[in-house]
Image 1 (cartoon, rainbow over the protein chains, first blue to last red):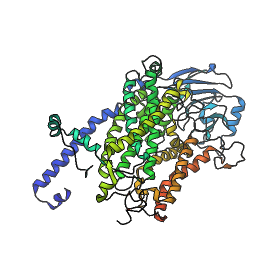
Image 2 (image 1 turned 180 degrees about the horizontal axis):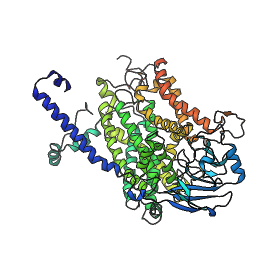
Image 3 (image 1 turned 60 degrees about the vertical axis):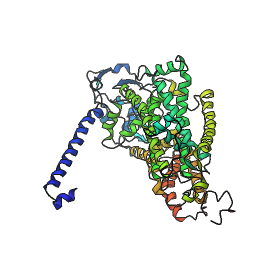
Image 4 (image 1 turned 90 degrees about the vertical axis):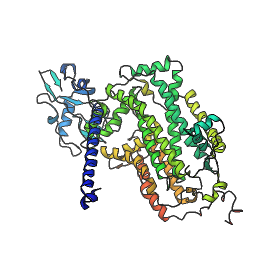
Length: 179
Length: 432
């Protein structure tokens, strides 16, 4: 087709090519416009996106305890860490086996270091890790064997990243707002 | 089919009228008289068995959809209602659930038959590739269906498998949210999974039509693996009916006995007790495993320490099947005449079963309890992690190294010129 244009068999051939290409392009564009809403409908709906942030009363967590709350359909761990756990995670701040190096201070709020707030989904494939069974004094994911320390940092196993710290803030001394 | 001359003669006036307008009776009659290699063994009966499996799944599935409710609040209860209150509902659901397992037993044997007898080689590449598409669609359909009862295994299976897509660098996360319809697996996810689970079996049926079209165009392979010369057609072929309708029918009866054994006597043997616990997004079961037919691929996923790498390996394990026709360099189709390759094939089957076994174990658990071991890179050598890795290595080596190299190096046994020759031990056939 293109060759006939170059060799110029006459105005008709070029005009016909133009019509073919233009019609083809219009058809592709039209199909795209029709198909797009059919694909886009699968994206989160307005009510799903409108999920509000939640507030949580930190006094409900005792030292050495963890409370799991549901936020946007996902578990959030709120953990009140013991001094021994804190000491251990700070000592490990620059450990060589950290896949995603972060200090414990970077993962907590100043003045509230004893509280750790992380999403409760393993960064590997999303299972909920259990506390107290791993090799590093933190979480262990039963699905594929990822070990996290008490700061939620990945230390061993297939998970690529630390447990995610969601956006949150202390609205008062004892209340946090997640989201 | 293309070379097959129609022998159908319409007899009644209705048939004659129909034959000039829509020759559907002729189509069926031609199918029945299709010349078929006379040496097909029982490994060739799985095609018919698989057709039956697909029909069973569609029939039971349509009925189940009349009672099932795709809503996170109601799904689990609606499945229990099917089990307890719907007339014969327990039987229908157990048939559907075990039917999936039966479908996979049959498809794995069907694929191994193709692998052993070289059914994927020229001119049958398209039969094989369409078959691979069907296999992939089967996996997708089975996964979607397993989510619907909304039990613990359903939920966490969906979580883990959809997260595989999230592992794709860059575009993974937006695709993941698009697929789930929200930040987590929820009602939107369940609804679309139900919709797609209903759709895909019909896509599979469409692919089966292509599979059979390609099969009848290129002609069936046979255990000897040779292309049957035109002048031998009369001697080496028999009509499909009654010879293979009867043979397939007998195999189907045996298969249905196995099927019934599961449905009636151990309907939950292949399932997981955890799936009778309603889905809980806040707690993962201590030991999550996929259904048995996904275990080898699940094992391969876990064998790779890197997340995206694991996903690539798992999809690669299926993807490599698509290019199989070009990886095998041997001109001999049937492994009957390839003793070296046959050994590697047997090892491959064992490794496949081993991968399935490993997929069901905890990766850190020792293979031989109590045996002294040492740490190799990131795990004990005496652990399922390393056993899985060795097995995964063989799985890929079989396709990417062994098949190409053995085809070039081996010395195959003499291949008979006709399919009658090995049977008649040369008496008549030696001459010509």
